[in-house]
Amino acid sequence: MIYWLDLFGTMVFAVSGALAAGRKNLDLFGVLVLAVVTAIGGGTVRDLTLGATPVFWITDPVYLWVAATAGFVTLYLARHDFLQRRFLPVADALGLATFCVIGAERALAFGMAPAIAVLMGVMTGVVGGMLRDVLCGEVPLVLRRELYATAALLGAGVMVVLSLLLPGTALATWAGLLSALALRLAAIRWNLSLPVFIHHPR
Image 1: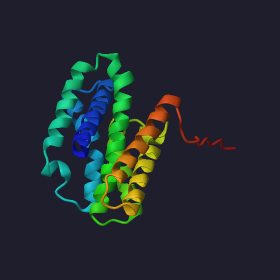
Image 2: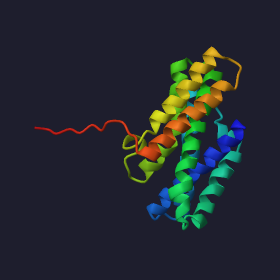
Image 3: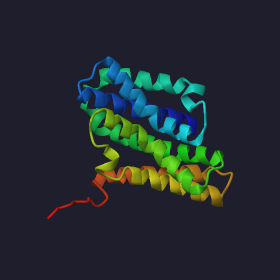
């Protein structure tokens, strides 16, 4: 089930990358690049940081095919306002929740300390979107509004803590996923965000 959710998260993040490419009027190659980078960027940086080589999409090319296909399909579906306004935010939240838990699980499997596992979970969830925004010449979403990285931090943290308290059970995985998903959906629904730093030099 987690593997299929991981592929679903890959698809959703690829769609968000393709939509970002459309907003910048990029060509077909640009759409493909942004879709793939957004979908696999976080997991790639995570695996390279952990020394888990070859990285996941090389050992399982299905991730690349899913990302590329989702990017091209988005070209035909982007005309539907429902995709961007209703479906994508919720699906993106599910993708974020899935990625942060999977990243933390992978780090624990490599024997990393709990704090490092949480960091790897957050990295898996947010780095792809950061790379997408940087390539589009924008301040990354994770740095400017709503609770995004915070949701990933909560999900990865819950997953790691429960994994230590209740090893060998699926409870930690699902509790972490649902925690991140609930916080992210709440942030979308009520525009929740961390306090903004405003500097007024004298």
